[in-house]
Amino acid sequence: MMPGKPIKVTFEGAHGAELAARLELPTGPVSAYALFAHCFTCSKDLTAARKISEALTMNGIGVLRFDFTGLGGSGGDFASTNFTSNLDDLERAADFLRDAFEAPKLLIGHSLGGAAVLAVAERIPEVTAIATIGAPADVHHVTHNFSDHLDAINENGKAEVCLGGRPFVICKQFVDDLAAHDLPAQVAKMKKALLVMHAPLDQTVGIDNASKIFAAAKHPKSFVSLDQADHLLRNPDDAHYAASVIAAWAGRYLPEHMVSEPEIGEGVIVRETGLGKFQAMIMAGRHRMLADEPEKVGGLDSGPSPYDYLSAALGSCTVMTIRMYADHKGIALDAVRAEIIHDKIHAKDCADCDQQHAAKGGKIDRFERRITLMGEIDAQTRTRLLEIADKCPVHKTLEASSVIVTHAVDPSE
Image (cartoon, rainbow, N blue to C red):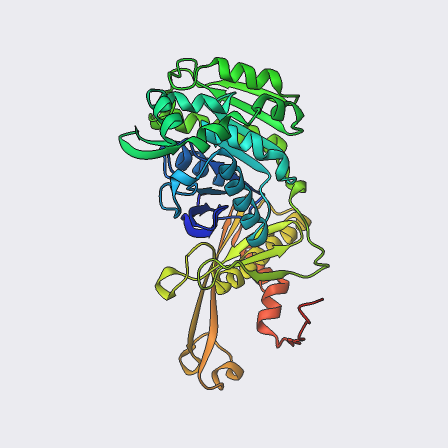
């Protein structure tokens, strides 16, 4: 599975500001959703955040990463925020996923973001697993970034500090709010699977913080050393390693059967996601897929188009039908492949159409099916297998006349 193109989305944060986010979805079915929280004064576009999101999408997990209020591309005033408002932003992000797609089952946090996902976990009941990277065991630890200004902050109520080469205003209420949180106590009550990742040489948040978090947590819990990595995982190789470990670990706690299954009976539900002009979520049993249109016609190109799905139905049915026949007859068919090309052409120009189709006016749908049969098969058997392809149920449906009955449903139902 490959990662899809990140989708720009926004939602309202705890202080009412518009928060900027990136939603990354796999190109295939989504098995679960994850929420990523970045480090103190960082952004959603940090290398670690991007690498981890990409790795998870390749494992079928959709990832939402966003900028906290007042940071990155998000609106709002950073000076008015604090750790509590960060938790509220995280909860709003989870609400957004729940409303548009499905609530997150995995939380990932980097540095102070790691402390935040630990503190907010119990407020998001659907979460089953949490992974932290370089997280402090005491959120008040973050004040070491501006320790030289603490006296001024306490005396004047605020002070401008330089963090990562950028100026930020830190208010006294921010510092006071940090002191009000007892992270180890919250971790001890947490009933979620936990992965603690930390670099032994981390000069920003010491490795002893990982020990305290790990000791406070109940099982199941795991610890993975990030060896020579720095706090921000600036080396892409370190970020990639962390990402691959999280993806592998999360698989144990995010089994497919945990994906929520709305009661849809024997049918398929398709609904708008609210993202982009055309994007729609397809729900078939426990399977989740996206449908969209190409960017050239105003879509996000985040999933196959409706006609792509129609072609896929014909192609998959063809492959299955040939396989069933070959196995039943004991034919040594190593593999079968079907390529479907859909086009709309004028009926009068269709050289492959029968008289009934050619007599129609206007354009008709033409599906060209190219079948590859692999194995030691004689010419007569190949011809028979190609004939069997025409017996596939979807082929028959497309060639026959179908009846579509439409009913209006009261939204209140």
